[in-house]
Amino acid sequence: MIEPFLLSRLLLQFGDASRNLLEEMSAITLTPDGSLWVGSDELTTVERLFPIDHHVFGEHESVAIANFIELFDQDSEIDIEGLDYNEPYLWFTGSHSTKRKKTKGKNLEKDIRKLSEIKTELNRYIIGRIPFSEKKLHKSCPHPTHPQKTCTAACLKKTDEGNILTEALKADSHLGPFLSNCIPSKENGFDIEGLAVYNNTIFLGLRGPVLREWAIILEIEVEETEPGILTLKEMGEDEQLYKKHFVDLKGLGIRELCFHGKDLLILAGPTMSIEGAMRVYRLKHALEHPSDSLLSQDTGDLEVVFDLPFTLETDHAEGLALFPCFDQTNGLLVVYDSPDPVRKAASDAIFVDIFRLK
Image 1 (tube, rainbow, N blue to C red):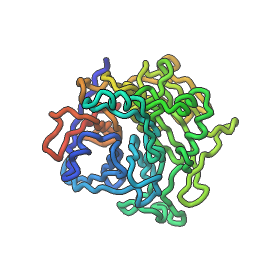
Image 2 (tube, one colour; image 1 turned 135 degrees about the vertical axis):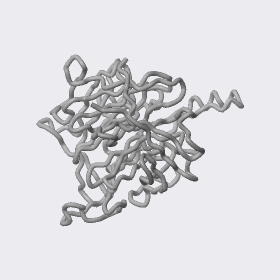
Image 3 (spheres, rainbow, N blue to C red; image 1 turned 30 degrees about the vertical axis):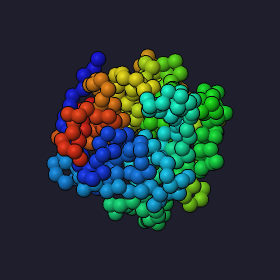
Image 4 (cartoon, rainbow, N blue to C red; image 1 turned 90 degrees about the horizontal axis):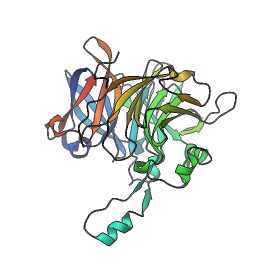
């Protein structure tokens, strides 16, 4: 086990919105104005926190994604599992997953029936971007450093059953069976939980499926073909719509991705709803793989950064972001779903961790 070094903690204050957000943070990123943006797996909003003191963020604002991007409907959750900022856009992804209904323990017959029911919520099938300029989000605005260009809010082209990426993956030899058979996310089904963006290249980390010990990162490139609509750009000599990078995480799935230079940091944890260790890996030179790849410690492409502290039934790490701390240019900020109660500074505030990143 490689022990992490805790540099410091941030205090996040959510005010009246604290009930859900303290327990269900699933993604986080930092924009150039110093604001933190938090995603939750239960909402259709992104949450903004402003720096109000040294290592304290508050003055919470909840920003509706529907103000910028047309959703499938106004009711179901997006299940935001990844956030990233890449100038000039704030990017987000839904989980693209299905879920099996939970039992309630009140009626045996109803509970057994519920275990046969799988639910699909189309808002989960959104990958989108929103321009960020002059310290706020816009539906459309001039590019902050190239004012002759116009930046527009947009999402990957939607279909009746998802989007053009999931439609393409249904024919995939590895992922197609998991999508076509609607295997729920917490049962090693298809589940996007990691997002990292470099210009127009998007990396999507899959919590599931894990094939033997191999987790999967999807790489896509997008282009805007009409206002508000992103399509998949063909890549490489084979004109692929996506690349698959199989990563040996010793049976763990991917919970988040984060660029550190041109390396990709991977937060790894159990793919199913079980308790288990979580680990941060570094995928070296992530942008330099011209086609599908098998990447491991044995090939020299992958290394362990550190193991996160393990607390049974709490502190499920979900979000990563680079965050400067002391003289460390890039500390690694980690936020948690189901946080340990000792993290709660008040009913509306919680501590999150910054680890040293070498």
